Image 1 (cartoon, rainbow, N blue to C red):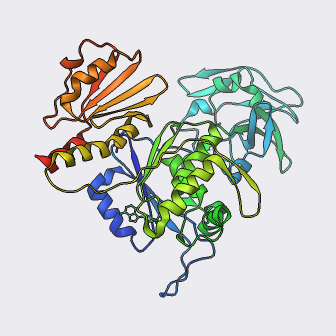
Image 2: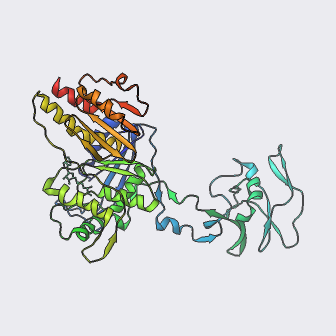
Image 3: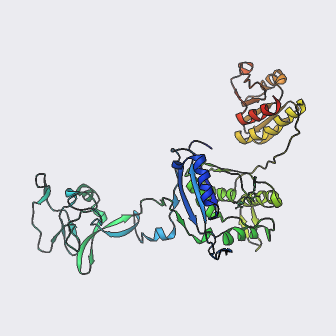
Length: 435
Ligand SMILES: C[S@@+](CC[C@H](N)C(=O)[O-])C[C@H]1O[C@@H](n2cnc3c(N)ncnc32)[C@H](O)[C@@H]1O
C-alpha cells in the first residue's frame, strides 16, 4: 500500500472485535480512521441467538497520518436542509444571532443594527476600546428599532459575523417576523456539495439483497455461484471515502463477483474520472469466470438485462490474468518460465498490455508510441541493441538477471531508452527459488 493509502474491510458483528485488534497491530491504533455502520440488510438476517441483524461494519485504516479521507456527496436529506434557492445557490434561513457564544467572549460581535418592518441597516457607530463596546452615533428613525443579539431570556449573545463581513455581504441578511417580532435572519448557504462521511449509513440503496443480488440476477439470470454480492452504491461510497482523487487505484483482493470494479466504473462515468481497479479472486464455484469477469465486461460494454432492457455500457477497459503454478526445480527452463509468467505483472505496472513481438528470449509490448522490452536472457542484449536502432520511440527495458544488474552501460548510447530494475518482489521470488 502507498504511504497515503487507506484500506477498508467490511465485516459483521461477530468478527469485528478481533479484526480491529489485528488491524491495530498491523497499521497502528492511531491510523484507525473510523468504523462505519452500514444498514445493508433492512429486512434483517435472523440468528439462532434471537436477534435479527441489519448491518455490517466498514472499518477504515490508513497506512500513515498523511492519508486523506474523501468526502461523500450530500444525500437528499442533507440537501433538503437548504430548501431556499437564489442566484447563488441553495440556502436555509437562520436567525443571525448565534446560538452558542456570548457577548463577554467576543464583545466586538455585540453591535447594534437598526431594524424596521421590512429592512435593516448598519447605523453609524464607534468602537470604544476602554469600555469594550460599540457607541451609537445616530438615533433610530421613526419606524426603526435598535436590535442587539439578545435572546428570548434576555441573555446577551453575539451575532454570527463580525461587522466588516456584514458590510461586505449585506445582501445575505434580511428581516423576518417571528411570533410578531422582527428579527435579523441570514442565508446560511450550502458551502460544499459534499460532506464529511459519518459513521451511520442507511440509504436504501445499500441493501445487498435489493441492489446486489438483484443486480446480478438482472445481469445474468439466476446465478447459482454466488449468494452475497454487495450493493454497488455501498461500495461506491466506501471508495469515495478511500480516496477523493479521480485517478485513484483500487485493489480488491477478495473481489468475489467484482462489485468493486463495477463501482469504480460507475464513479468514473459520473464524474469523468480516471480511476482504475485491480480485482483478485479465487475461482470458488467458478465465481471468477462466471461472475466477476463477465460482469465487469458487461458493465463496460453494456448489455440487455433479463427484463429485455438495454443497459448502456459505462466504458473502460479490462485485462484478465490467471495465476498459475510453475514447476519447482532449479532448471534454466523453470527460470525462464517464471520470468515469462512475471511479464504480465510488468504490463500491469506499465499499463501497456498489447503484445507486439514474442520470442523465446524477449518480448515487446506496445501502446501507441511507447514500448516495453522484457529481456529474459542477458546473453541476448547485443541482439536487443540492434533491434532498438529500428525504433524511433520511447522504450523501457527490463532485463531479468539473477544478480540484479541494471545493464545501464550497455544501453548508454540510446537516448530514447530507459532501463528499469526488475521490481523487487519479482526479483525476490526469483532469487528465493533459484539461488
Ligand atoms: C465476501 S466475498 C466478496 C464479495 C464481493 N465484495 C462482492 O460484492 O461480490 C469474498 C470472495 O473472496 C473470494 N476468496 C476467498 N478466499 C480467497 C483467497 N484466498 N484469495 C482470493 N479470493 C478469495 C471468494 O471467492 C469470495 O467470493
